[in-house]
Structure formats: C-alpha cells, structure tokens
Image (cartoon, rainbow, N blue to C red; front, side):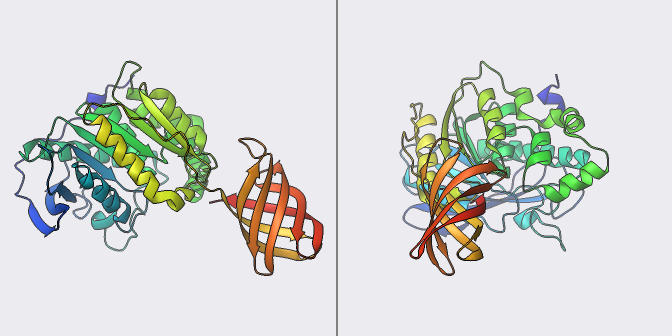
Length: 381
C-alpha cells in the first residue's frame, strides 16, 4: 500500500505575507492571503494561490476554521461565500481555496477548470497531489494566525471539491471533521462512468485505457487507499440518488470507507441539490458548528428535495415534445413506476411511467383532452 507521506509530502515551510482586509460588515471581515503552491506545476498563474478568508465579527473565543472547495469548472465562489456567511453567523471562520487551474489560477486562453480533469492519468495525479499540497500549505498558514482556534479545522467541498476534500481528509490528520457534498471515491470509476467525463473517456479508451488499468495507476490518489477503519473523525456525506455525474455508487464507496460518517441522500440528480441549496448550506454549517466544538451532529431525518425531470416525450395525441416535470409519486427507491407532473409548450401533462432502463419509460399520458399511450426519455436534474 502506498504511504501518504511518500505520495503527499508536506510542502516546504515558507514565510507568509501579512493578509489584506478587503471588506467588513456587522457579521464578518473579509481578507485576502496570497502565496505560491507548495508543489508548483510550472505555470505561474496556476501556482499563485489567493485565499478568500472570512472571520466572524464577534466570535465567542477563537473561532474554528473551515476550508471551502468549489466544484469543477466554477467561474465564481458564490456557493462557497454563502457557506462562509452561514459559518460566520455561528462564529466559525472559513477559507476559500481555489483549486488548480480554476478561477484566479486559470491560465490565459483557457476556461476555468479546463485543464484540471484531462484524459492523462499522470497529469491527473499531478493535479490531485498539487491540490492536497495547497490545502496543507493553507493549514500551515492557518496555524500562523493567532485569531484562529487552529486545532479545530474542518474541510468541505462540492462535487470535484468534495473529491479533493476527501483525499485531503484521508491524508491530513490536522483536519478534524469533513463534509462532502455530491462527491465520491474511485476516480477510475468516475472517469469511465460519469456523464461529465464523456470526452475524456473517449480519448482514454482510444488510447487503450480500461477502468482496471486506471484503478492501478490512480490508486495513489484514492482517498480509500488512506482512510482507516479506526479513524473516528466525524464526516458528513451528502449524495444524490439519481446523480449521473458522481453516481451514487461512487459516493457509497466513499461512505463505506469513512468510519464515523453521517449520510444524507437527496431525491435528485447532481444539480437538483441547488433547488434546496440554502437548506443544504445550513445543514453543513450546523455539522461544523457541532463537530468542531466537540458535539454530536444528527443529519435531518426528513429532507424534501424534489426530483425534477427534463424529458423528451412522445404520445399518440401530441406527437414529440419537450417537458419539465416533477415526480409526485414513486413506487420504490429506483422509481420503477412513477407519476410525474409536466409542463410542456402545449400545456400541462401528467404521466404514469414504467421504467425500461437508461432513462426510458412507457406509460400513460394524461391531458385535458384525454389519455394516450406515451414513451418518455428523461434525465433527472
């Protein structure tokens, strides 16, 4: 088994510049801190890291700190800023860290995140190891600030940010608790099965890569390689039942490797969580408010998250059309039989569907003018 200290060495110690305050209000002060990556890629833009730091205005004692990581291709930090505000309300500081090749670290001529996930296993390993090194250097910086309770550090991320967070959590013992929103484990599985990596998968397959070969090469950057069954640090896994970008199977592989986890499953696809974004952010903030203060966290027992469908619909009355629908009844977790209410360009529809597989169903379409047989292909948002 690979040793984490060999694959993810601590970045060299450096002298950090003084942070710069950029704003202040009644709830928090915002600062910037800039340093170079501890594992440079050779691209000067990518290797320059600017942290966004949020310090609550009136904490009781020194505040704990949570590191916030964004999703793949993020063009702003709005979701992380909203999380930072919720944490500040609870007296918790936070630090937004831009991932390699994203946001301010995007090389000229490229889109944010374009160079982060590429069909090159060795490049992917370098990017993931740089990500962990950057998080470790961020923790080194946090440790230098007398304003923080630097023995109580958490980490959370969304999608790619959750995948990176889980790897950092696995190899960095200074992180005391972690939350993973729509992330998972097994990068080889994700590269070969995610709906988000179709173009990368085609290139890998054409080059002779299989999932089994990728497993062997990417094992060194798998969180499950380093997570231990006796690790009692608390974690909070939020996944989505109908996710095709980070499939539930991937999230469950991560969950099964976490010894002290709480899990919440949304009745949505990968993007449907944004329909209940505020409640998710509040739930994550409550998790850190509890775990970084030595208290027990309980995830919501009931968390309504709508299952939204975007569908191509064919029925004998109206022909081919597009529709956006909301599930109002499902026979089981797989939704083998379901009832959905649709909005279409020609008016509202109700649909009773029987799943055939791969998003295709047959059933009955109901409209004001009557009932007709229907065939529907759906993707869940």
